[in-house]
Image 1: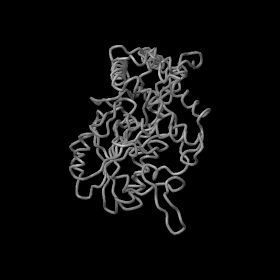
Image 2: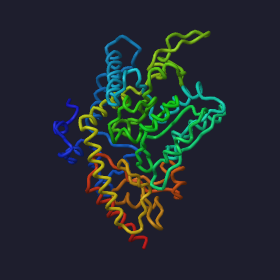
Image 3: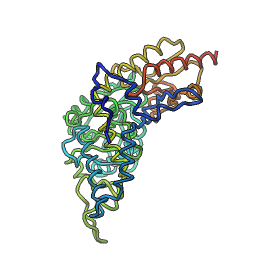
Image 4: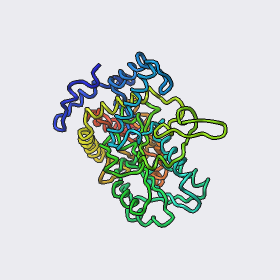
Length: 419
């Protein structure tokens, strides 16, 4: 089985054939009410290419068994393939060691792991945790739970009206009580790319560790955790053309070794008696129970696929998509773009005068266009812009300019209905 079509291997920034890419995604052939599907909800979940589907089927039909449990052929094969995927993820983000990659059920699970495994051990009463207005609820609620439990305080970096962080105010939040920073690499609601390398450097100069929520960044750009020098980085498989129920937490080995496990059970132990349990080494210390083996292997196949297409090529093409979409939507009267940061990924949030976002989403669906409407699990962002919700079109490298045109046409058609 070939992992990718031969055509993908020769793609370059100047020769990006989106139709060749689209041919790898069976779901894009669907029609909704007789109209071609234009799937523009990639910030919520991306679609899966055939090579990833094929790899998961091959595992289920020829390699499936529990891992780390037996010496028979299937168990040893499944264990090997599972660990191969860990190595692929290590290469994908340029981690220093395989053991710095922890498989989780997704970004939310990974952030909770850090909040419990690191936060409960090292953050105490009166300590301060810095978050930002741009955070997804998954990078707010776990820290609030921790703060309520141990008496810590949440401090928040504000944003301006373009949706960019006020970095000077970020710096002013630091003091001797600051013990942790949690920041999203890219805003899921606005597409804003945060200057996380600068933020990490400032925090580290004050001996403060930083967790980066990379759920919306990893699908759109090359991630190098050693270059960023972040302490933790996390993202989910289903946003990178992989399966749901799988993600990773990258952590520096020295920090992971000091942390306490979040979950107890099989495989995360070295020995167990009723008097005492000795924990396994990392990464196994944080992977209690039977993991989603097929999903992990599918995740490895997904990053193989994305690497073959090339993350730099993806970033360049998606920049062209969002630039074109922004130019087109600005020409429509009665449209307000929410979030206009200078550095953005391919996410376009907007509101339409006198039309509720849910009506926009419902009527676009009738045109075969899938967008997301609501607060996008980012209610602090909505409050800043004084809107209850937005319509969000989020693009991937398999979307086309034709689909952008369909979105624009659909919005104009809806406006005529409400005139």
